[in-house]
Each structure stands twice: as C-alpha cells, then as structure tokens.
Amino acid sequence: MEDRLSRVFAALADPIRRDMVARLAVADATVNELAEPYAVTVQAVSKHLKVLEDAGLVSRSRQAQRRPVHLEAEVFDLMTKWIERYRREAEQRYQRLDAVLAELADDSESQTQTREEDAS
Image (tube, rainbow, N blue to C red; front, side, top):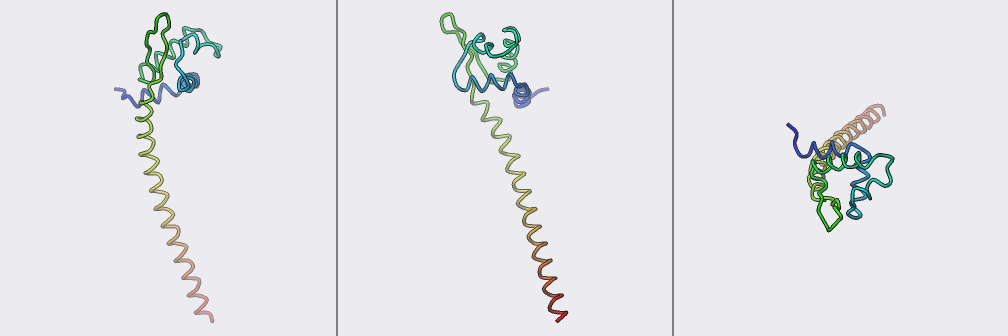
C-alpha cells in the first residue's frame, strides 16, 4: 500500500523529475519542450512525466494540437504540512535541550561559587 505522500516523495527522488517540476513551476510545457535539455529520449521523458502524473504532481490538458503539461502546485501543500510538522517537533526538542543545558550551566556556576566561598 502506497500513500500519496510516498508517491510524491518517490517521484521527486529523481533529479530529472525535480528539474522538470522546477521548469513547470515557471510555465506549462509540452513533452518535447521538456525533453529538450536532457540527453534522454522523448519516451524516457514521457515515462518520467507518467511518474509525476501518477503522484499528482502534474496534469496534461489539450489545447488544439498542443498537449501541455501543467504543474499541480497544491500537492506541495501536502508536502509542506508534513515537513513543517516534523520541523516543529525537532525545534521543540532543541528548545528543551537548550533549557536543560542552560540549567546545567547555572548549576555548575553556582557550585563553583559555593566552592570559592567555602575556600575563602
């Protein structure tokens, strides 16, 4: 069983697909336009697009003779929410660690002052 988030991250694991997403963020493009900068066949680009399409990252429409590929940006909201949740949890752990370290530093400083007072 594969959830949508896993399909999205798996689709973006490939650098060519990430580059295609970056280019589609600027403007829609046809398969041939997307294939231009790569040293791969148009069929290989179509396979990459199929993976992106199955993950819900892109869609294709028909405009006369063109069949442009469109980036479905709302999928990034799903990714952003997932990443933000774990970023917040990690930040809270660091804040707790900072508090513990500050408390340890205060305890160490007060023990040093006590020893100095006892010695004098």
